[in-house]
Image 1: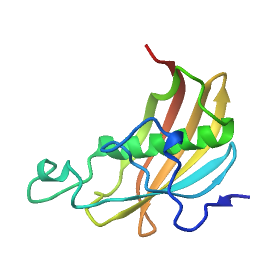
Image 2: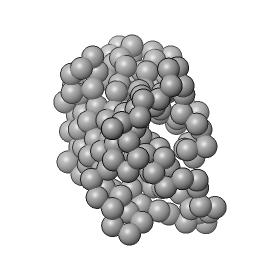
Image 3: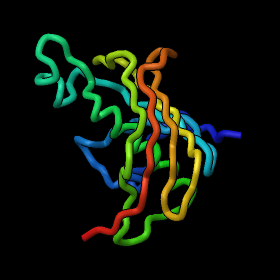
Length: 150
């Protein structure tokens, strides 16, 4: 049974190595250890990428959508495994079958649902779906693995 995050709670930044402007998670909505996690990302017209992507028709970049999904997966890994191992971080190993079904625009509230589907050694497989106002806008599969810091 998923655990609902307390109302208004933002993710603990220690669960992610990313910081502004690449922090892509605003709120953890719910999670179940080792199974699934739902997060929220508010897409703001003030985000730094919109003036150039694209002038006159701002669209949330696909690569940032993928990063949002990957950060949600990383949070689920941390909630499942516990604290960080010094000198090691979670990294995208593979992105498969990613589909962008509708543009994500300023003002949208992107809800990402990640499901951990398989564990092989230190690697985790995920399937993710993104929704805006209940409509699916993106979907894809990920492999997240451990990487040693140089």
